[in-house]
Image (tube, rainbow, N blue to C red; front, top):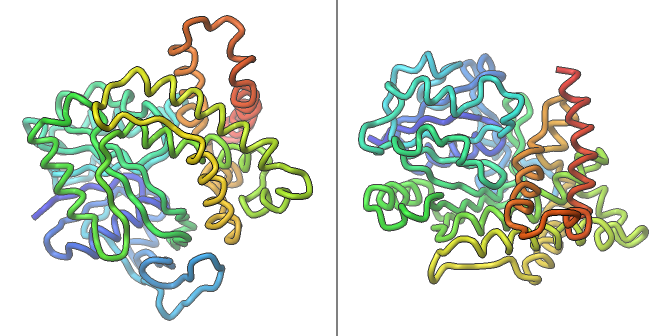
Length: 365
């Protein structure tokens, strides 16, 4: 029996939990920490409209209610880590938002506080961060010698609206080790390989990530551009693409932002040695990200996570999506004086504008 704890049951977290449950049945014991949807889930379970598993068609808004998944419940549901009695766990899967400056009860401190009942000895618990951003593992530094840390980058386009999950595009999950030094560690490698096996099925796409840092930078091509711009302008992706031809918004706003992300990413990636798996962000990946977003997200008028959060009055993941990019730019630039304006003016200006948005959201908490 593999014991899994899921923390953060949003659109991504629910789909991860459902997939593990669907794939493995009684071979897995799933505990979930659920706060806002607790009453609904304990009584009725989740309703899932999924392009992969039923209830939704790809690239369209037609629901197929007869094929929806209804009544999905994890085996054990609790409101907080303090309530858990089913540990320790083989895997702790974290899919929460990462807002380090404002979250006094952040998940890394809470897990550390309850580590005696959550973590197995000898780093035999894997903490899986299926979250946005770069350098997010640094917030878990107090536990780095007590657990194996796995990076999860999800391409799924899934939202949770009060216990009803809408899953828009094919589930693709890339899993790898954050720490280069653990790549040849038998315990860490075995845990990673087992998780990939647990999550893989004949419908989704689950891949082994040989260079987690590169993969996170590649995801930031989307999150540091579409996610941020949609949030700032209060427009979904479809509405942004309506201005593609009339106002040249993609070429004049999205593409320059991506090029700046590419610059910072490649400067950062050059500092790490992944051997044969060394990679950089290439022009074709920038172009393909724009094309894929137009094909997958624009037709469904998809709302990226920062837009959803801002519309619901919640704080946005500003620091880990944009702030850490700018920090790494400064760290990896030989001469920082004045360069931020010259080399990444779009990212810098966007960060300042979204800082004001965050200030407004924080004042409404």
